[in-house]
Image (tube, rainbow, N blue to C red; front, side, top):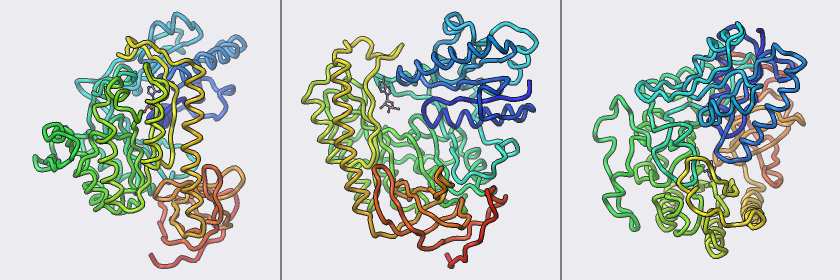
Length: 489
Ligand code: 5AD
């Protein structure tokens, strides 16, 4: 077997896992091909958070099964949440699959492949590493050869101890396990040495972070809870060591230009986290804070452990502490029992919180989850129409926001060229910006002047490059580039 292809479904966590799986396979001597049709081994890295993602997997396996009839040597693997959740059951239903591997077993993949090649039977490895958790880190030696990336994900925790009634994650990713701060800091330092400028910390409830090696000491967790809507005892249990981790990263990775995190839980948006946002320049002025619903009745049924007033009080404190900070969110429509009035309260919250982006989903019942006991009583048609209405409202808010930026100068971290040849990057506040330039700008912070707003992004012209950002490895350019004269930082 010589080469592999990975097809990824789902969230950032899955994309991160796919990137690390690629490194494990390259370290085992395989090379990556972009086209699954040309690969000896195709790995489908799956997501089961909503039913649609799972259906996509089934049709993809069917398609590859046809290919396998022509090329019996083709090995089909399934990784990720569906592998964890379905295991042997899926193997019986889909005999085209040769191996299934859960998120905690990825280092075992090369050995499983060798067994498969030697004619071994289909196998499933999907066990949580609860007693001795390990975390997939970047293997810079086996990264893709297309040059250093500008942005990178770094895992700080995995699993989830919340029991939101709609969510399958606790069953596919296991209980919360935290990565030692020491390892996180080392990985970030290594990434900045090869030119990474922006790191996004990853975890299912990323802001519940606590260092398993207790490096931050007891003072890191002190409660400063003076919330109007949350009783003191509960506010204290919401404290974590996430703010201390952010401060440690800011101090120990001075070359890092930007730090983000995803996804936080609103109850861990504490006074200390808000203070970290106000004090740490490296923290971007954008937070994705899933709210799920604007109705207290629905939030209780979802077991979210906060009310709309608590959510609003906390995000308002955050936006007051950090001028201009933008918010985005996740919302589920058509949760069991959601009435028209519950949904209208959600629309009202979207307006009040002025979310710059809303990721909206129609409720889909998932295996093992507590909400299965509730009747899925909002019709499919009604779910679709509520979702369309939600997007209509949130698109209008985004449109207003993006239009209000026209004529302004903003700083963009350039991530690369888009298909049309324009440069693309994001502002600190997570606005997507495109502009033209003949200069090689990957990984550079540049100042641009906003000219117009599209539906989801901004069009701009280059004003100036504002930093030099020496890159350890030369960025790969399609054609020789001129170099931009730099103004001092
Ligand atoms: N149905 C619909 N959406 C869901 N999500 C999680 N579980 C479900 C479900 N059963 C959404 C939530 C979560 C996002 C990642 O996916 O909004 O924040």
